[in-house]
Length: 165
Image 1 (cartoon, helix red, strand yellow):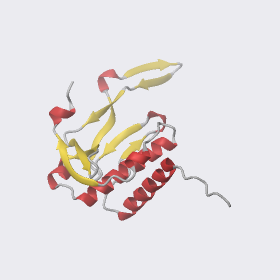
Image 2 (image 1 turned 120 degrees about the vertical axis):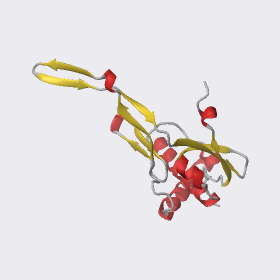
Image 3 (image 1 turned 135 degrees about the vertical axis):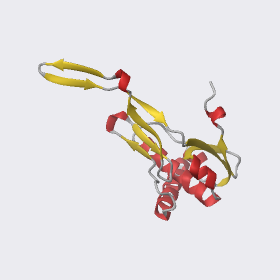
């Protein structure tokens, strides 16, 4: 009698997460499902709210610009930093199992509020991001813990809690 191959629970959970992300992307309720932009080897260059508003972006620091002439060519070196604008905030999503997840948002979206379906789609966008990062070798994701969580509630994280020393 042939034995069926054992299924890998991590691979199965990742497959469920990918399916959930694909369905959420196709749902179209988020204007910017892919809310992080990257510039080659520099990594994340811009973070947007899932509605599309820019929250953080790499910008040059003018005071640190250096100009040098080498063999008749002008070389300009710019230092950049990730700047956060006033619209940036974070929300913590609490799931039915009691676990929590923090995701970026804008103050306008927070003021309008989120229904549970939207929170689940926002979380699916985050899982899609994790999948891409894991595929690129940027760390393992605990898919068996994350793939099936469903939103139960949310709240904004006050700035004074986000920026503690």
